[in-house]
Amino acid sequence: MTSNIHWMIAAAGADAQQTRQAGFSWVHFCSRLSEEGTFSLTALPAGSRGDYLGIADSRGIPKHCAAFAREAVCAAQNRHCAGILADFERPLLQELTACLNRETQQQNLTLFVPLPLADYAPHAQVIADTVISGGSLEEYFSNLLSRFGEHRLAAQLTCTCMDFPLPCASPSGTVLTAKQFQTLRTATGSAVFFSRELCAKYFTYTKDDQAHFVLFDDADTLQAKAQLLTRLGVQYLLAVYPDAKAMGLF
Image (cartoon, rainbow, N blue to C red; front, side, top):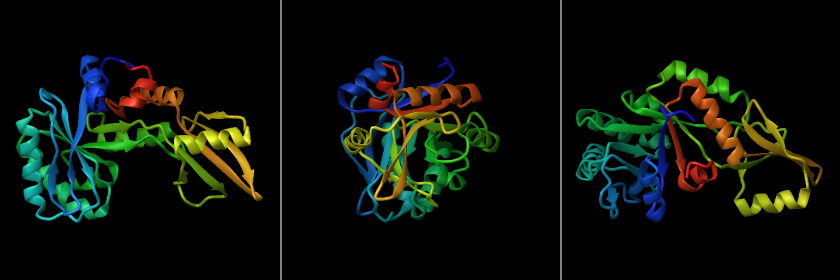
C-alpha cells in the first residue's frame, strides 16, 4: 500500500483518535438527512481540522435542497473540514446531490458521492463499491478509471457476506450478519476458495435441494483489493475503522 494512497476512515470515539494519530483522514458521520427531510447535525468532536463531514441518509424526503446544501457546507466550514461525504444512493436524492455539488464547488470543498449519483455531481469524487458478484474487479475498476480518472475515483472497502441461491438473476444476494455467517460455516463445513476475478472468498452448500453460493470478504481479501486498486491507480480508499484495523492499518 503505497504512500500516494489517501485513506479515509469512518470512525468514532477512541477509534477516531487512533485514526488521526495514524495520519489517516477521519470521516465522522455526525450529520444526516433527517426523517423530516432536513439537515440534522449532532455534536462534532473538537479539533476536526482537515477531516470530512459525513452525511447519513435516514430515508427522509428532502425539503429545500439548496438550503440543506448551504447548511451542510456551513457545518463543514465551521469545523474546518476538507470536505463532505454524502452517503446517499436513492434516486430520490438526485436534486439534493446536485445542490451539494454546486455549493461545495463554490466554497472550494471536496464532495464525495456514491457511484449511482455520480451524474448529478460532476465536480465530486465518486465512490465505487469493491463488492461485486460477477465479472472481474480489475476490469470493473479499470473501466471506472477510464470514465472518471484517477483523481476522481474512490473505492469503498467493506467486509460483506452475501448468500446467493443458484442460479441467481440478481447481482445482490441475502446479506448475512457475522453471526449468521459463522453459524452457516460451522453447519456446512464447506471448503473455502479464493476468486481472483472477484478478489473475494466463497464457498457453496446445498439446503433443501437448493444450491447456494456464499461470497464474503475478510482481512485477507480487503488487503488484496487494496493492493489491486493501488496498482491500478485508485488514490482514495475508504473503510470503516474495524475493517481498517483488520487490514493492519493500525
